[in-house]
Image 1 (cartoon, rainbow, N blue to C red):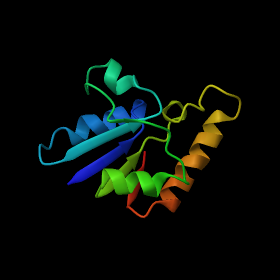
Image 2 (tube, helix red, strand yellow; image 1 turned 90 degrees about the vertical axis):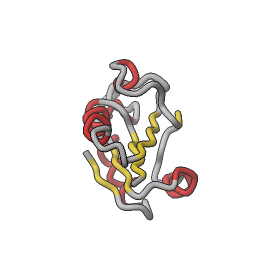
Image 3 (tube, one colour; image 1 turned 30 degrees about the vertical axis):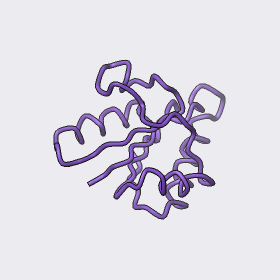
Image 4 (cartoon, rainbow, N blue to C red; image 1 turned 45 degrees about the horizontal axis):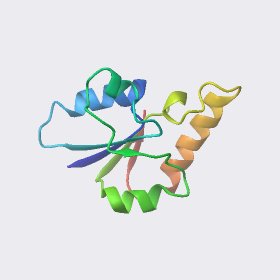
Length: 109
């Protein structure tokens, strides 16, 4: 099984930690930053794709990644909107829009 983790902040890091327990799961990680918490904590060596995922580009990126499942970190820092006023709400709304627009099954964390 191939799982695409979008965002490697708090929730994404915990999802990666759990997914790594099963050697049969291939994990592909994308984040808007090259050094999210999962990298800084040494859980993963690097982010596979440094890019911002949006409702507009999620399906074209998914065709490239070819996941069976998408796991989305909904914390504000995963989309880099958490530090601005109303950023958490914007990040949450965008996360659910990404999940709704995706042609691949999504779990929002």
